[in-house]
Length: 469
Image 1 (tube, one colour):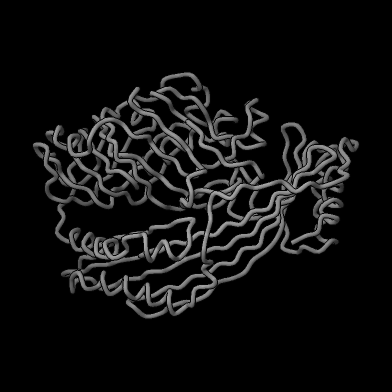
Image 2 (image 1 turned 135 degrees about the vertical axis):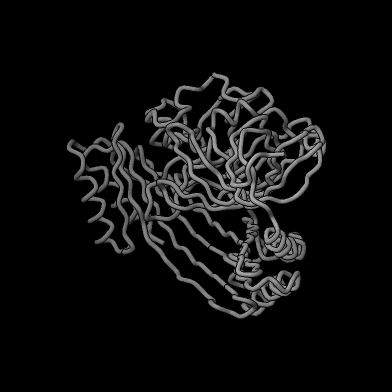
């Protein structure tokens, strides 16, 4: 995308005022969206974007800028402008660039751009037919197949020999953006969004998409007759897979160096301390082959890693990017991510999950006399400095005498990350992952959240259904 000779000029221009590290991140992104509304094609195609971001570090200071003009004049002007943020004499002169080997852990056989658009449309129409045929009360099905092919070059210099990393990312995701069921003026919605760092063959031949399409329709219909959720403090069992979003939001963000390095996290000083029940261990693993949040390298060129965050209830690590590693006096551990060249990279989650325990999911439910079973979450909000959160459940049920009973709606979980971690008293062995998009300082990025079935022995539940009986 840019030549090595141009990269040398730009790096040296960036380092002219004493910066101790300079980086050029070059990106070309081809997006494709095929979207249907009630079985009819609404949109097809997507934009091609490209550009570069330049970052200069000097001690505990960082400057960043970007441009969509990859010509020599524009890149040198941007590098010079950013270098102007510092005052000093050159400490590094870059004399050569060496290409680094990048191990490919996410292999694709067929690129999405090579799949005929009619095949994509036919696939989505089959989803629509299955979902809409569940019940005549389903009035709207909007679904899409979204793919992104991203080609990246990273030139990184903190000495006379700069490193060049090249990487290709391609992800696909099928999204039922909205499944709406209506009866007597009442409207209920359901959602499904499986995604992978994998090719179209996975969606056609590995994913049980027929079951997914039917399930999302059944959930929308079920919520038409659901009663309001009761409120109070009582046990809550959270299903595996997407249930892990509560750990991601309430605890995961608070373990990113973006927050911990500046003491903006409730867990900033927690390394070596017990922050969870001893039955809880948790990881962030960017190396899982072909998973939605995985990658070969991070946005700084570091190899992605499996990072343990919690071990037997003890906080043992943070997610650390190159810049915040300086504040923390730790090594970067392959978790620096960004949405695009328009964003400066920082520490972010990839595939974050609570590890498997020893219980069986059915035994956890059987041993819960009265409580709530949350099968899926909707939206929520978190304050990282305190870990306080509230999450709305998009699918929840009453547990009575060890049985999952009637569905309820309007269920909200209210608490804090510290409270949740310490109050987890049962952990099953059925780890699963759910796909989503995570927004933070460096933009919106694909992430997996996950966990086995867990039980929180007591948490505040909000609802308009009165007392739990």
